[in-house]
Image (cartoon, rainbow, N blue to C red; front, top):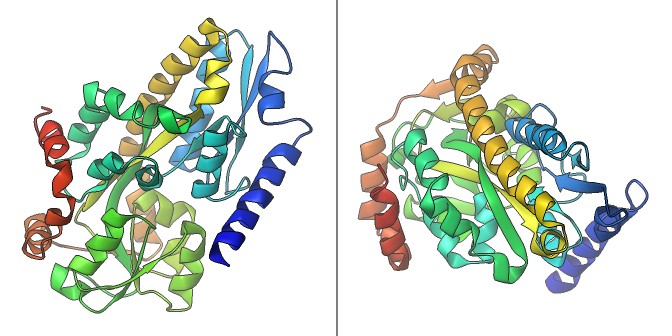
Length: 334
């Protein structure tokens, strides 16, 4: 039954993608030999940093190609969940999608490495890693599955966001924690003694509101723009994860494009991602956190070293020992 419902959900998503704005999908990309209209799916609302990055990508691409390429952006999950839009990209039914890095774990388990807590020292380290050789290498891991990753936008530093105050890892024991449907996050919750509830992002607000869960691991932008502050008034100030927001492109679509358009897409994707990282970092401290504070969110102090030690003592990293060479490679980035 689960498999049937999953297939039905994907069928509905495909119908939305192909039914929107006349001819979409492959038909829109190749409707003319001179001009191309692509779709880009985002789960977050307009004005969110992901949306800003996607808008910048469209602007740069139109400028670079003299208007030959245009990207129509569909925010707020209009084209389905991140899992669904990633599948659509892999099938060639959707040209672009922005998804959490956790979504890529199901296409290549090596993607787990950048989802591990404390794998990045800070945002600068994460930026240098993903815009350097490691990021280029990781972007190629998914091509056999039909997905290209020309750049990595910033999802954001992740903190425990909760209905009660949480300062230390000991406070996590017994709480109901929503996690992404990914091993790195599920095992994180288990290691800290939580009752883990994996669920899609779109269900989290209601789950917090109804006390189905007590907490999530979330970034300040998502808490602000999707109004999770209305149902969870506490955030721990320890950065547990630095999550990425990979830009997915259909390899099937890419391979059918003229070389100059291919080059423009790759160049503009990196430039837009770099711009988005800078936008996110500056607004995080100047706008997002002050605004959340005004809205009544309390930032509870914590010790990063204490959280990391708690995970080590619980054997969390042993479950991902196969990624040790990749972890070492990331650690060597200066």
